[in-house]
Length: 72
Image 1 (cartoon, rainbow, N blue to C red):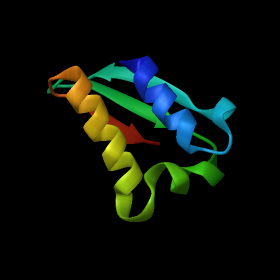
Image 2 (image 1 turned 180 degrees about the vertical axis):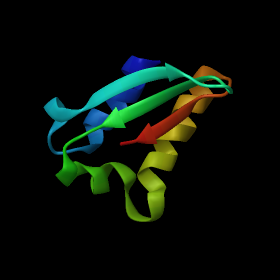
Image 3 (image 1 turned 30 degrees about the vertical axis):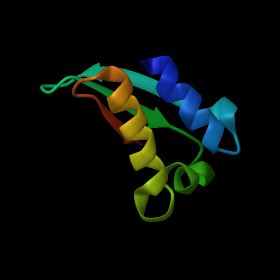
């Protein structure tokens, strides 16, 4: 799952080598924290959060459970 989040994040940003994904366990299930270059945060989030929301939707459907994706 971590690989999927990393792949999707790298596909969106200008500096894919700066993308880091960290997995932690939360109360509801795994939480993936995506870190990227400061200039790419806006690209990852997208206008009105559409890009990150799309990434969350893809990851949730692939996981078939409670998964969260957060941007740092």
